[in-house]
Image (tube, rainbow over all chains, first blue to last red; front, side):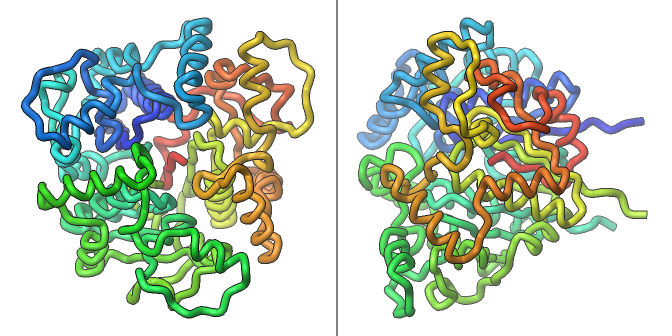
Length: 159
Length: 159
Length: 159
């Protein structure tokens, strides 16, 4: 009897390349039969944003955050060589040529593989993001839930 | 009989938001009865700096590092949307409105919860930081001590 | 009978300071008798580049990436206080004064300690890096090989 392995990733970063790395590892781990959780906090929450504008009542500050942060991974920059937005275009062109999956496709695959996608409610509050603005079929939790998963984990990463 | 769980965080980053994330996880883990260590290295050491100027004999280079690096977490920038220092102000305003703890308060709480705060002596040397400039009641150690903690750990993160 | 401990690091970052941190931890863990793997992906691959120009047939895009990315750790910038390349010079001057090992020396030491240095083949393809451009005696693998190592690991870090 072998017990199930577990991978738990905190996705803090809101860079296209780091989000891509997180989802590639997560999808790999799920294919490897791990139970996988990605806990999205701070800028990593933006990976879960729907790309249309959602009408939600917000304070002035929340509106500003909402406007300045990318709506979904596809609008994110790179952690390196961003070149005012030209870097992501280069990477995406190259990915297309290699038939690599885009980040939105990797997220879709993660949902199909039943990877648990969690949005950190504390940072949602801070950044003024509401559930209506995020993808469907994700979970909402705080640091206690993260720790409950992570402390049983084999692979724990902060990205 | 259940053995005590352990969380060990390397805090390398000197960004306000990442330091906040590290201390929220650490305080959560301590509340969850983990034995917790935060090992501060490189820019993460600045989270432990006292905010007043301390008179210490330094070389020219050490003085320059000392002046350019923030004295304490409260003076740090953000990893994203820093906007020449306007970003941290926005985040702090929002945190205040949500009654969220500031990073200096989170560090204080960590000390009350007996989280082991360690300063990496090797990088202190490199950056010219002396013990007199750092908070009281912290420990001083190197990579061997980190590994001794981490290899028994359940949750190991590099932030 | 005590089983051998294992440390597995994903080196995603291409900043001199973060690469240095990764190799210091890795060398420390190896000295501590861990089995150690550093899995280089994305910008972290640049730490493994030879510093001369290697003639390889490349597409236009691959040539551009090749030119823009640093050839080896010695040409990398810092994650903080880079100051248009002045920061790395400052750090290296200070390291020299403290007789600290440079990153190329740390990499050499890692190879002597039989740390497994792995280059992620998927991101090599994306960035157009070929085996001829990377250091000798490294391994080539993908996310499945990483997970096989990491899931048995005691210390897993994403840097």
